[in-house]
Length: 304
Image 1 (cartoon, one colour):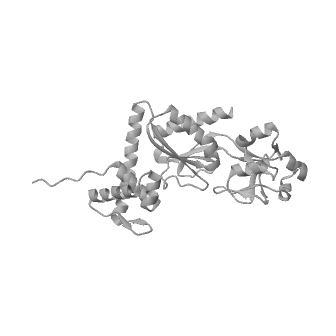
Image 2: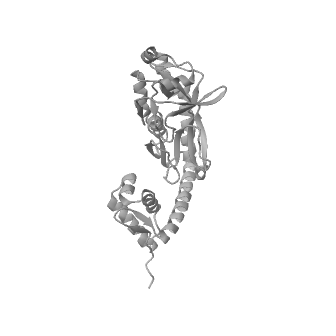
């Protein structure tokens, strides 16, 4: 009599397993995947039954890997990567990108610029299933399961691939009524006597502005009664005449043209180039390449 054969693990079960590990719990994993905690628990139980081993230590607060769980984690990553590459190859063979793409970006730039671009990308490639998450912190795209990050700034981790989507700079500006009331700064050190609108976002230095001019880089200590982790709030405060702002030209160019803001210390700027950043392992992904090329074209057209 033949022994009953266990089914091989489904790629989706391995994906659920890796999400549970990354989120350190069933409820958090279920929330990210859009599933119920009961369903996530069931898929892990099926995976453990299929592999005939215990993969996770469970407590009331969190889960951790068993020794066999660590082995399965390594294999799951490799299996899903190979499966994804197969999917990409088939997509290219059908001449249309398809499958999942998990993207992330910062709150302000993601909401104002990346989200509209992704809407157009989805219309162009309806076979793509795209998720966009926004953060105000540094993201480890590999350990957190992202395929692509759209980031502002030139600090690209060495283990990743960075492709510049558009050149951009930040400039110093303020509302006309603020400058009439407090005076126009003539030197960088003058900013120390002004109300500066301080943005604490991701890993940006708090209370210091690193700026560039033809003669090199300079730093100035800045302070003021108002600060926020939202660039949109900071911009609104500047329009209300509350202080000096350091903001991307993409966001303030129309306001400068309308006269609602005035650029000051024009010689000083700060790099704010926009990059697509992705892991080396996805360098040959057809759907990722299609996404990055679309974004590069999209942002270039907006800058014209």
